[in-house]
Picture 1: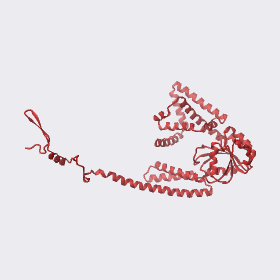
Picture 2: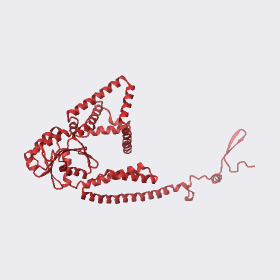
Picture 3: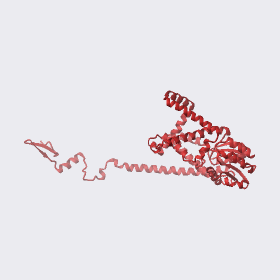
Length: 427
């Protein structure tokens, strides 16, 4: 009986020696056929390809479907932009502000609900629409920048060759105003420059703002609006009220000269005299897209001491410490969490700007210096805690501060998480 019908290799014994029996080529093909083995020397025919070979074609078909949907989305965005331009035309006609908070939040709420009904993540939908609305506002602001509430009126920028003076020069000029500059060398021509002006804006360092107001006041027309844009308001406002008997208003734009758009940028207004006579100027900032916040000058200075003075000084001190220690910043970023990158970015941003702007803010008043002294005393107390290794004191202080922050901590967690997620997407 043949126990090797396929002719497989076999070994037989012959007088104690081994003999190898090799398989014939014809038998190998027979084996391959029975076991469905492909001969590596012979290419497979199309009919012999595995079923998965059509996956790429199926993917391509699906991708073409997605491309078609994307084309429709872009077309709808273009159609939406056309409607936005019609809205801009109407707002220009009736001097309506670009930013409408209630309208935007209602729209976001409706789109979130629509997303839920469609089985989509509402946060995903909100993020998309906030970007769409942001672009819409930027487009509107760019077009509204050319809308002058009093187009053709003469505006005098005192200190107009400075960074903020140049910034506002561009905005007023593009809105159709006649812009004049009065800088140090121009005082001999002050009467000619002030003739017929409807706005005089002081854009000089804080420490000389009061003196400049006193000097310019006697040359201004009675109906001219006098304003300043310094980061403290009480002392400059009083100086302007004393120097000029016409409309007076204090302004504090919470942005710098590198800002490309005024969309949702806050401008603080501190009333001085004849607010109705100053209203056209406030309306102009609203048309440009700014958010107007009207407050008392004293309250402004108190809050800005924290918002600007302590914050900027703390950032300066951290940067100074890193510099003295000669820390390898790029190396730290390799080990960093997103929150460290975000914080270091804020420090680097400070030192990328004009130091005189920050020196004016930090050393603007004796009250601010007193507040900084209190801040440094607080740090000194914490140093005692660290040197003693008092963890219990740290935990107690942490708990007390956490309770004081209250619900804001949760809001801060949400907002900072959003920023961190965006940072991760970028880097």
